[in-house]
Length: 490
Image (tube, rainbow, N blue to C red):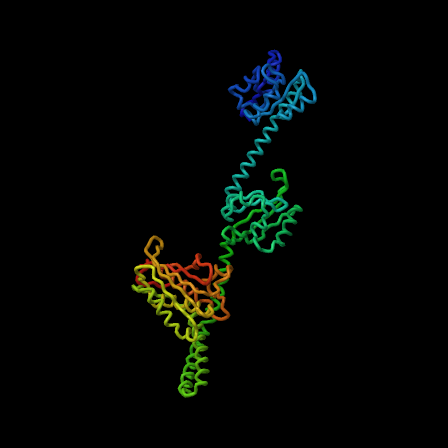
């Protein structure tokens, strides 16, 4: 409304009535304006600032019912009071249907006029306050760094704020009216959340519950939510859910737990490695002597060979743990990586004996040379190839491809390694480089964690190749010249 006196536009063609109404309105503290026809009312220069229109039903150029729709378009927030000397039920209903706020019979009673204008002004004040409140609420929820979801009692989605769109990777339009549990929980058991919805529908808020949300691209993230009933959202009861993204916190907790596990393992291995190394050396010495004594006994030699294999496996397990714990020193020198891969394959000849295995190396670049610590990169290849030999049934087929790549704007070499094994289940793919993660029934679970660490210290990257639908496939990218000091230790 106006900062000064409320403006009342009188649309009345009878001069005496017009003058009388102006005096009454002025006495009540309003600012009266007057015109004598519908067209003059629409053309009035101050029409946009009018708070209430006092409209004679029968004007020289139109009837009030004809003028009302045009007035509503011109001043949608103004109240309209119809005044007429010929009141009947049909005309009253018609005027109200076309947007009139009230209906008065001439001669107009001053007190009734004052009361009618006050009601119009109060309705306008409340409407403006409602709009301001809705605008403030919308600005708040649309700028909030939380997921804000409004759901009907039938679980259909009625609103998703912009942060929620960003978090879920889904547009508001694409999820509108869909079942929120089926949309965001996927195949998960929805029964606990169905119970939660029933509780909120009965008017009971539910504070602080965690939920894993299925986002676009099949990614899963975690929300810490609070839910409460809304008495009215666009004319219907609803449920307001506010969720804070706690995915990073949960990942930090997981990593902390993993670090605690590793610390415990490291502490135990300090003493165990010392004692076991001495025991392994004594066992190896005895095994060598026994092999010398029984060299002519084929059956005994086969048993000794099996014992030696078990001894080597045990030694490898201890070495995995020791290698992961020790500092890494990098002294990069130029080397051809396809040759290092072939050398690592040759070093696994014992593990390939008696099996059908093949390694196919394809070079799609003019140069496979990078500056690397050759021993460490050979260890990377050996661990990857060893994993494939353990995971694949015969015939084992491993393909490796070398091609040009860029990494952070620098020339790089990509190595794609794929086997024909069963690959990894979807839930394991995000943890493949985690410490102590393994799908084997034996081993430390440090093999690929060590590989990841060795590639990282060379300023490179390693990931599961997303373009390979089956088997186990890795993509390694190493800069041609790593951005490292000549000797690096981590």
